[in-house]
Length: 216
Image 1 (spheres, rainbow, N blue to C red):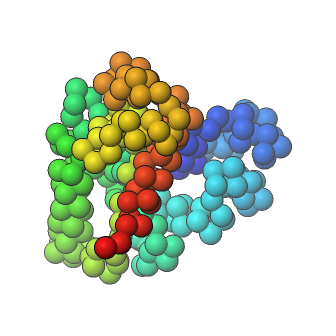
Image 2: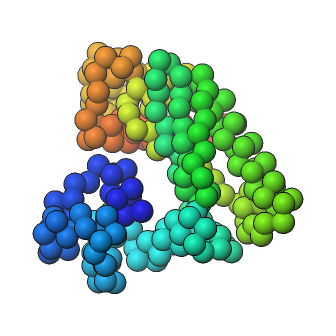
């Protein structure tokens, strides 16, 4: 789980090791499960990932639940969103989910709207099916008291998802990234670096915030 959270943020083991004041080999052994991590080290590790120890404990509980080593959490006390990893190949969206659920869900769709609908409907039927088979499912899952967080793994999938609503010119203006460069990212001709991907996402968030401020 620690390795997954680290890699999803593109943070190297060296960065974790410096924060924990240990060697990179120790971090590698922790992630491989061959070295125990004490609570103070876990706090430092979580800090680098941007999580409090409370958030990390919730993640550990849901991760162990997915492996059937603990019952599913009874409440979504932190109002955490279920993370969906999204990429795009040959103009088809590919998504996978392994948060909370005991198996990896995989989805495909030709546009982002269809992908979201498929994921939401699949999760709803999955949890209802579990309950129908006598499996105890937390009420917040049955009542759909959860939201999804879409983690785009590349600039192509991110730009393709929002291109029907936001032009590359607008994203270029807000992000400061050249429009031609954005076009190369969107067409899969060039791969964006992690910092560029964050700038694109921040620009989309900013544009979205400005749009939601409109009143009539």
